[in-house]
Length: 182
Length: 366
Image (cartoon, rainbow over all chains, first blue to last red; front, side, top):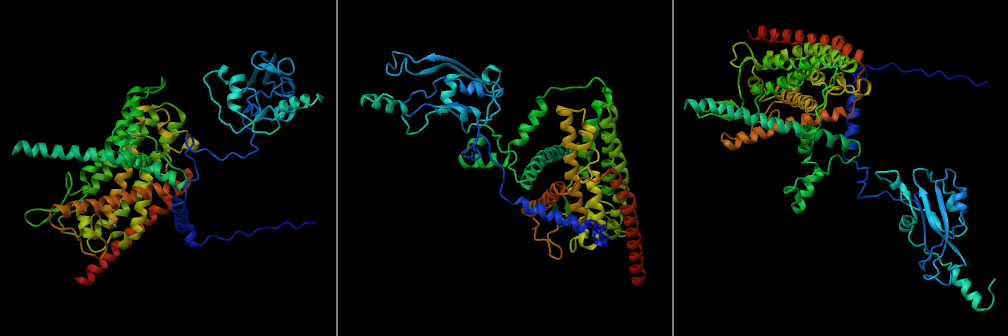
């Protein structure tokens, strides 16, 4: 059996009853903090350092050749727990990119409703093409609900280019040139 | 000559009011800045006036120190929507801020803030009215300030202001006693029978030329200081406001400029309290205890004495702010028991002790 420990509280000394030594001690503490370095940031100008694995606003990325990586497989739309993602699959424009047209698809519309998004990162995890990333943007504001639905153009604007060295499409092309299409 | 005799005091009074109001607004800024420094923050540093704020280095420095912030605060109070709640007693609701501010500004009339040497070689105080009952005047007028708070709390017709008003009036009444008793020994020592100064603050300051009364009467100084904190409704005694339990206390129902008046009144009380403490216990414009005043007889000496007095007052204002961000608020019953059970008996004992001491010295000398 554990023994209950009873703490004896020391009676206050006369000096302690007058509060004065305690007040002086408090004043000393605050005087010290008066000269300490500020711990706040000047927010809009100074930003906190965001860790690399931070899960911020989900964005779409392009590959270094400027091609859309998303092939509108809609896995993210399917996995998204709060159903924040809406994708309309579409074809790649045959005139702008004749090589890829009719081979891969691209989203016609890609909307992420940031009022629903819970920043879980499942879309990034599930994406087979590594096209969607939760990056370091953590502030969102707008005057209307519509403003907070990120459309395709906005998503690519926020996402930028992913500097990976994978070049899936170039590899496929060179393999095809060597007569080894699959 | 006659018109000059009338116009000059008016000009002096206006000048003093403007300086005092400026001090009030800048002590608000000081409060915000010091609190933020103590809490590791930066404080107001964004307000920038058009011309002076854009001088290359100076402008940034002043903006960073928040020097232009009081202007923004004042304008905010001026241009906010004037809301009068429907359930208030209109007359007293409007009257209360004025009643709170007027006594706070009136007491400065008898406050000496510097000295000059007149052509006859006599040292005179720089004061609007050097009346003999100066201290009595201050005690009388400054306790009128509680009416502003009581009126505000009552006319707001709402429970939190009412509670705040009750607390604050009870507190002010109980601390005024200790305050009055604490300064009696001061005047017993400084104004001996037959002295020409009576209860004027100038006499007290003159009497402290060699030794400050804070060193000679530490107990009086301590009781007075605690009572001043209570009188000005500052933490740890801000029963009237106690934001955490009474929303905003007596000024819960007030907004915009009427709230601004209460705010200015509070800081006017702080400045007056600091100035009084400096006058009574920190030797006014006297240099340092035991050292002769280095101020010359000319205009420059006058300016120096004013500067020295003001720097002491600024330190006391800083001390007020410093204590505010150090101590938590007392519970209401603790405030009452501290006032009635500790400070009042202590002040009486102090008074009796000093009376006996003076009587003893007199019998030995006689």
